[in-house]
Amino acid sequence: MSETMIPPELVAPAFNPASFANRDDVHAIFTRLRKDYPLSQVEVPGYDPHWIVTKYADLREIARQDEIFHGGDRSKTLISQAGEELVKQYTGGQSNIFRSLVQLDPPEHQKYRSVCSGAFSLDGIKAALPGVEATAKIYADKLISLAPECDFATEIAFLYPLKVVLDLIGVPEPDHAKMLELTQWLFTYADPDLKRPGSDLTDPQEITRTWRIVFEEFEKYYTPIIADRQKCPRHDLASVIANGKIDDGPMEHRALISYFVIASTAGHDTTAATTGHGMWQLAQRPDILADLKANPDLIPGFVEETIRWASPVQQFVRSATQDYEIKGRTIRKGDLVYLSYLSANRDEDAFPDPFTFDHRRSPNRHVGFGFGGHTCLGIHLARMEMIALWKEIIPRLKSVELTGTPRMAESEFVCGPKTVPIRFEVEKA
Image (cartoon, rainbow, N blue to C red; front, side, top):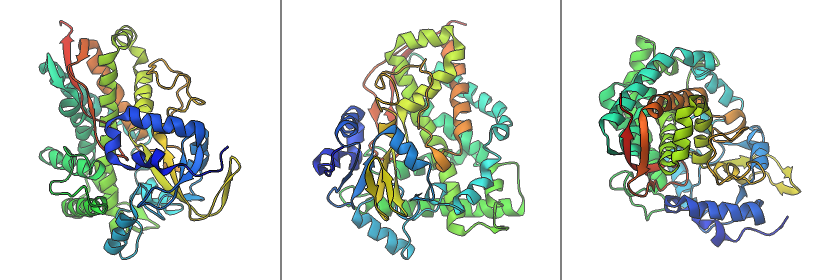
C-alpha cells in the first residue's frame, strides 16, 4: 500500500457539495481511491488533514469501535477550518452546534439512544404499521391521480416519509412544510434550489451559520411542544422524547432540542432520497418493474438494493481518541477520519458488480444505515415505510419512463434526487 498522501486535487471535489450533483463523477473519484489510496491521508486547502476510508471492511472495522473513534469530539461532517472556528464562537468552545445521537459518544450515546430505542424496535414499530400503510395508500393514490406525468421526487418521495415521521412525532400537518424546509436548509445548505434564502455560498462559514439558524428555528418551534408534552403527555414520539430521562434526570437542553432535530430531519430525508432513487431505477429498467409485479415477494430485496445504491448518508467524520493500527497504517490520536459510506457500498471486494442495480442481490450487507453503535435508530421504520409504499405502487404501475434527466441535490453529506420527472401508465382497475 502506498505510504504517500492522497493528492489533494484528486479528492478536493468530494469536499465540495456541488460535485455531488453528478454522482458518476464522485464515484469515479472513490473508485480511484479504493484502488490506489484505500486508506491514506489528504490535506485539502482550508480543511484539517483527514484519513479517507473507502473500503467496506476498513469502514466497518472503524465504525464499530465507538470508544476509539468518536463522533462528537469534532464536527461529525466535513467542515472548513473557518467554519469550525465559528462553531466555537457560537457554542463557547464546543465542537458541535447540535448534540444529537450522531454527535454523542459512549457512554452518553447509549443513554440517549435508549430513550427511543423501544419505540423504534421491531416490536415497537408494529403499532405504527397500520398508520404507515394508510399513508402509503394515500400517496399511491396521489401518484395515480397525477398520471400520466409528475415529478416523483417533489410530489411523492419528499412528502410520504415526511408525513409518516411527523405524524409519529405529533407535528400537526399544517407544519409539515416548515419541517421539510428546515430539513433542506440543514442537509442541502449549498444547493441553489434548496438552500436557506439569503445564504452566501461563497463564505466558508456559511454551513456553520445555517446550522445555528436551523437549531434556533427548531428550538423556537419545539420548546412549547416540549412544555405541553411534559405537562400532558400523549401517545406520540414528542412525549417520549420530551419526558426522556438520562441518569434519572431530564435531558440537557441542547441535546433535547437536537433529539427533535434529528427525528424531524434524518427521520424522513434519507428515506425520501432512497425512494426517489427507487423510482429512478424503475424508470430506467422496465425489467425490474416486470419482475417485481410478477414476484411481489422481491420488494423487500428491491428496497435493500435501493438503500445500497442511494447511500443517502454519504459520509461521517470521526476522530481518533488513541493511536490505532489498521492495514499496516497508524491513525494517530486526534486524527480525523472520513468514513465514505458511498464508497463502501460500491466496494468491488464486498459487492459483485457493484455498479449494477441488482434487485435480486443476496446477500446484501450494505452499510446504508451505518454500522456499529451508530447504526440508524430508525432502520426498521425506514424499511417498513419503503416496503409499504412499493407494495401499493408497483401493482398499479403498468409502465414508467423518465421524461428528463433526474437531478441530484448538491450536498456532500446527505444527498438524493431533488427531481425525478416521469411519465407513467396505470393498470386498469
